[in-house]
Image (cartoon, rainbow, N blue to C red; front, side, top):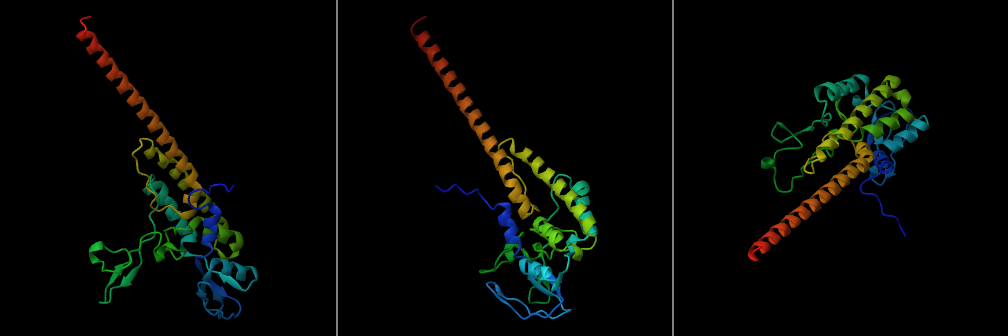
Length: 255
């Protein structure tokens, strides 16, 4: 008998999906284009940069055929700004997702991807975080992409020599992870009343996968408490109704 699968993605599945992220590399050798399921990769010509899936970039890095360019949000100054926002600017919420990129409107102007509904035309695709191009590893400095946790851990584990101040970055990431994990645990207080809403704006994919079991346990506990309280209230109402009915029958009999 097959065991039931847990709801949502588990951390290992999230880490696997993260390997599909495109990262920037600097090739050290010439390499022709490779046909993949997602399409052909660009031909590598040193020292021109190119974008490859993370799994392929790690393979070339292991073979010493390329170096991985650290994303701008993984630099120490960027992480310090994010930690300052998490601890001082907004101690209760998470840092906002990367802003939407701008695109041309065909009339010499620019507009964001996430535009207002009144500007939409039939057939237009509405994108929002984390499905915006800015929510990938190309996120600007001071913002975290959707796969920030698993992507940073992978780069530090296999390409630490390509990340400036890797030791400082590793310490900052540990502090940031602890701050955001404490916020995730504390945010479940809003669910205790049974009608609260848990805001997950700015939360990463791995954070959701790791906290899903804890949050679902809290929701299930609140649901059981609410059900028991409702059952007790109904029993009290039934007892009260039966007591009132008994009193009226006694009066009718003249007791």
